[in-house]
Image (cartoon, rainbow, N blue to C red; front, side, top):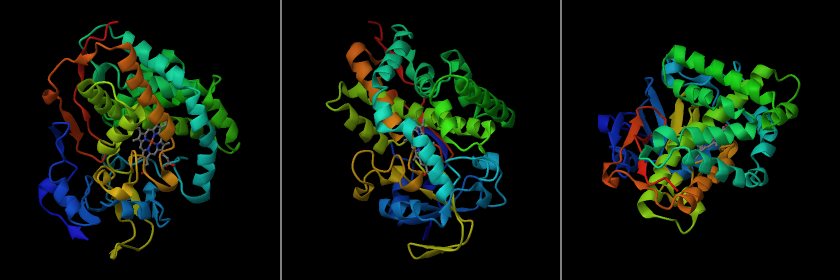
Length: 377
Ligand code: HEM
């Protein structure tokens, strides 16, 4: 394992750069080997996997788990961006083994390719309606579209009333605020979940597929995970995708473009936190129990072992993104609507002036703004 001590090699640095500019120092970091030790944002070492082959091994290794109870004791859960532990909340993202597989089975029908295909027209309608509502512009699609659209899509799917859209937008934004904001956001998400379960939608279907021992509060948390995971990622991806379309024009193959953008600019550049549950020998290096492990998904874009299409942008193994079909379909729907229904849409600033903002955490970067003119029809 290579230890990099020079500051520029650390990817957890907040900053602004051009969309095509690589993370500072990241190339050297990748050249350093399949496993790199660096400083975690919340302190202490983190082992980062840089190759697709080792990533696939780690993402299917039952000794490397997501229960945040195994996070270093010194970490502040909020500063570190940790979810509740497996004991504190029932969650796809922290459960493992048979309980995790059972939860995935309960979610699977609502997010299946067939189910998602049946909603393609509704996704295009939603994109058209939201873009129409913006007027001819210039408008900033990052401020006024990319956050709302994924929430409309996932909300419609689950049965969240459209009247609660502003509450959902506000809750997602507050997730990045202070502790009070975080608590307020979770309260709002619980209300969104309760409202969805009162309607005829997939939230209720999910409830019915879960054992009776699962409480309504548990279901609210599961719904929160779908809403937030679906918004956060698709929001960021939309900025890069729409910028590409506005710069290059109508794509020959929308799905291929979506995958290419996700591969190059994955909205989750790293996996979520994992921790060694015991001593683990990884690529010849012995990691102590409770060592934090991340996979550099963004770093595998040029790695042939990442596979075709979007590569590892959606992860791999048992925790591979549960919303993969939904995400790809909703992104493709926006591209199709933009080129078909808004042919005069164009960037309102030179492409060279676009900037991406890195949050300085394991989270992904997003465009600072995407000013667009010519949206009128
Ligand atoms: C472009 C959009 C998206 C990308 C790139 C993405 C990426 C990912 C990645 C990399 C993981 C695995 C993290 C890990 O192993 O630590 C993940 C998990 C997950 N994603 Fe997505 N995601 C996207 C959209 C969505 C959407 C739309 C939903 C649902 C509405 C969703 C729901 C989830 C859930 C529930 C998990 C946890 C799965 C589990 O642990 O079993 N994602 N996603």
